[in-house]
Amino acid sequence: MPMGFGRRLRKLRQSAGFTQKQLADSVHVSKGTISNYETEERQPSPMILRDLAKTLHISTDYLLGMEENTQTLDISGLTSEEIQFLHLAIRLITRNRR
Image (cartoon, rainbow, N blue to C red; front, side, top):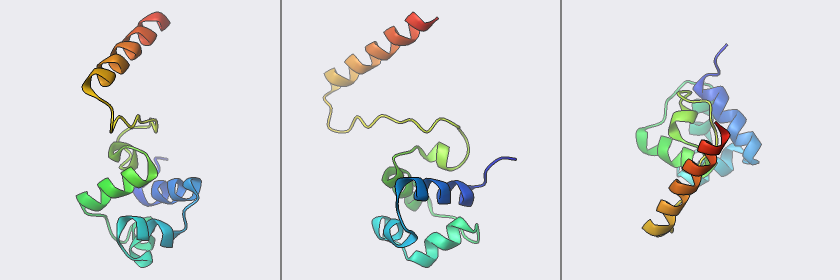
């Protein structure tokens, strides 16, 4: 059975070690709002969804159940040259696995 948004959010929050209040504070909503998301009584706005994903270090697609890969790479603060280097390294690694 696919995991719904609320269950996925609860699991991610708990895995990250956040209480509902701590997660709520980090995305500027109330504890009750997080509870409502987890029980699927309410759905977050696109901006809150983005903030939840950023806080939990996952993609919005994963949070919404559109992908199963939780791995993301934070490239903020890297130069364009460093990002190009990472792209090249990833291509070389995946090519060598074939």
